[in-house]
Amino acid sequence: MARFRTWVGIALAGALSLSLGACSSTGGKRAEDARKAAAAQGRAAVNTPRWTFAMITHSGDGDTFWDIVQSGAKQAAVKDNINFLYSHDDEAQQQAQLVDAAVDKKVDGIIVTLAKPDAMKAAVARAEKAGIPVITVNSGSEESKAFGALTHIGQDETIAGEAVGDELDKRGKKKALCVLHEQGNVGHEQRCDGVAKTFHGTLRKLYVNGTNMPDVQSAVEAKLQADPSLDAVVTLGAPYADTAVKARADAGSKAEIDTFDLDAKVAASLKDGTLGFAVDQQPYLQGYEAVDLLWAYKYNGDVLGGGKPVLTGPQIITKDQAAALAEYTERGTR
Image (cartoon, rainbow, N blue to C red; front, side, top):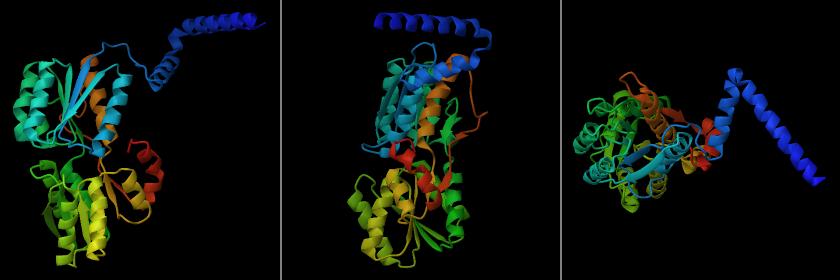
């Protein structure tokens, strides 16, 4: 009986295969569903060559933001049959050398951040001279086109800063502190300058060493103690929000803590009111779209943006939206 059932199953499978083949002229949706199912199981959804793409970022060690970027990039790489390589260094000259190394490996495409564009210009030019298409991501939207990249994916940092200034105004804030944790990062300067552009109150900048959290905490605490009129602190990365919360408590301040970027801890802190709001630039989407657009360019000569950045943010997240996003932050995609 078991053998009979097995042969019946095989016959039915064969009949189903023939049926699908006979409907090939109208089976586009079925084919697409099959590709999606394959991708969901960790298999490529396309039959293009197995190209190698390298992503090189300015991330330091242990930065959870870049884990989310990588998550998106890796999932797109699976779908697009891409061999994905990731490397990073928060020192600009070292990051440039990593780009040079990718060029020497003759990769098929490069994704790179331009947090410190002057140091990266020659490396990007070398990649393009070698015929390797380049997409910039996250930082460097203003320099991307001039450097010859296909497009830039991320948020416009000035626009994001302006959104923060508008939100601070809506909340009635009068005096804010903008905490810059990476000196020389043009994107961070653009964020704070954007806040100042639309904020009707007074904005002060505070430069800290983002690789030393105790120093960050003590610096923010000192500012809050020295100026009790500060009613808002804006950090430029999710890990620094929690540090600013601790500094506020030690300083005995009532300043609202707001932040750029979203992760599970930020979502929880928004939900319980520890933080006021967050600016989400959707890092998962930055990684996913960077790989996907490189694949589309290699396969079909496609370019998105029309010479303008492809924006993934900003989106202001408050307590009202935090609960709905908690599931995504916990799985590491928001």
